[in-house]
Length: 275
Image (tube, rainbow, N blue to C red; front, side, top):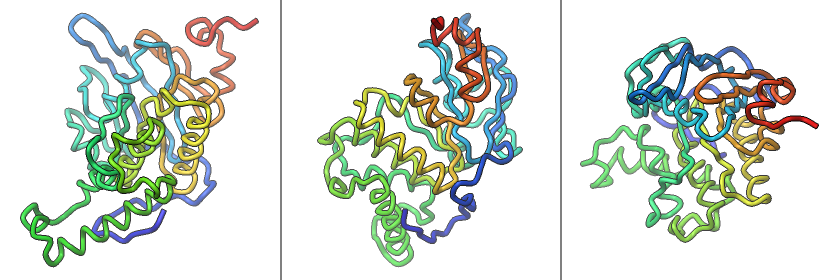
């Protein structure tokens, strides 16, 4: 991606190929209920800097609820979540985003009538310093700032190999390319932690291979920490550093892909009985 200097304080990226480092995100004893239904029960795990951390489990296990707690959509009744040692409670999605957490969703929430470029530009909103009046008039600092943000977004478009579609309305694109735009919008926030909710859902084999490559490149080249929910176990085992397994809102496994794959409780609950 093209490097662009902005009026912000971006986190220094890790060197390419650097292994996972210290804990960047810590989830401690999270419990979440909706009325009498327990979505999550006493869930704890951590995410290390520059790793790809997968969350797996059957439908209804609480995976998306866990991501919703991390990025402020839900407020858990118990427990805490810390980012780089800073604990945040009762924070909304906007506040969590300002701390450096970006999110994609299983169901695309793109602006279908807007171009690829404009959709990804919406991810720069948190970085824009000029007020609406200055932006509308496009004068002085506001115009220069918009130019810098557009240059940054063009770099993301190049990285995701969607240059040919930059001015195309997103609603006219195939599903797999719309998923790339969704990823691009999240990357435009320059996140420290990127939450991906089923990034491969609905994709064919070729589209999955492309998305895997982009996720690995984001992790390797930018040093971005990735937390992803994914049902394709081949993808999870190939690209994840560590995996946490949920079942009916409880954690039943946590470890490397090999450890999780051979855990008897995980096999019974999710992966199926081995021959």
